[in-house]
Length: 233
Image (tube, rainbow, N blue to C red; front, side, top):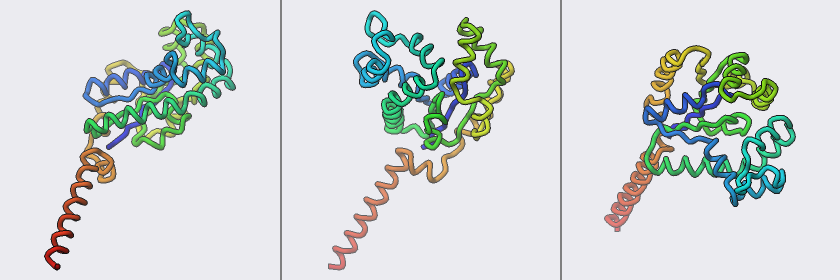
């Protein structure tokens, strides 16, 4: 099985690339969706976060006010690190479970869409790693246009993440999304060809089909050995 890492920065266009993979039949495990599940009212993650940040981060219905929590942690590195530490075990286990379900369905290529792929040390799980990159000014302007937030808030949110230039230096594949949607689609087609090429023997061995092949080979070997042993007797 090939697990492809997909990351980028806020307003870099990572979600657009993630959707392109889905359109082309490649399953995507979205860490943001897993994180939302980890924060649902009554969950283990919810209890940890409420205990650390207090009831003031809750909406009237008891769910976490994600906007308010986001503003709190984006402006305070210590609180942001605390939130990441609290949720990391729940997000990691949630991602593992989603990958396992896709493995059981027989998918050979899976994309992990993780904004904090490097920060959370999940890059070791994935190969290749794709980074969706834009220059800082384009990133800022797109975020301002998308969310209608203040420039200070936008910069805080951008600075809360690893710089895109640093992520780019760690990538196996870089998608430059400073151009048009047509430019992005053209680059994506080349990336799609790369990630869907035949699996290596190691990757095949990690797939469900590969695991079944190994088990079948072992079973046949045992039966043959047993036959020779019985004939010898």
